[in-house]
Length: 186
Ligand SMILES: [Zn+2]
Image 1 (spheres, rainbow, N blue to C red):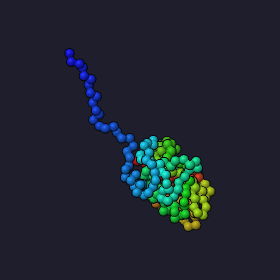
Image 2: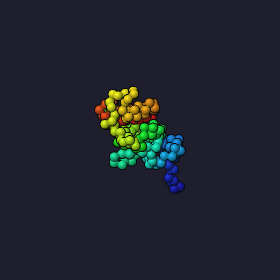
Image 3: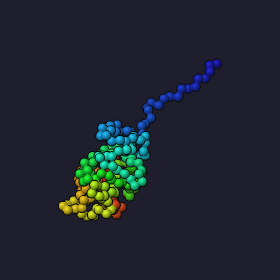
Image 4: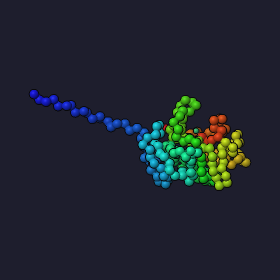
């Protein structure tokens, strides 16, 4: 009697699906621009998560608690791009409260923050003092001549036309103390 051979387990025809494909081009570009960062293995819902460890566009981004600065690689490149505008306004450091945050928007959809493509900016430190959205943004001022410095800065940023959302205290009460900027989700 022949001994029964165990049946070989068939190999799957397709390799397992890669979750959260890494966007190599973006990572390469971020490296080429001399940004210091680490690539994260996974960050829920974020396509190409990175943790930033240097200024972006010559500007230091920081939080009150000194928490990590995590976002999608594409959005890191967007902030790189904003560097010259912020620098033109004398900004050296920006305090933010939230970048990547897994949460829903009031609409019930996942917020842009949950994709790592949004940031809430509160304070802009310049050599001539700190501009605070809560105190220094004049609501309803528009972008004409003679508007306050912070409004002018916001106008210059919005004029880049690269954002999916650009929300200021003019938008609603929830945004009275910060600028929310985002790029499109995937
Ligand atoms: Zn926000």
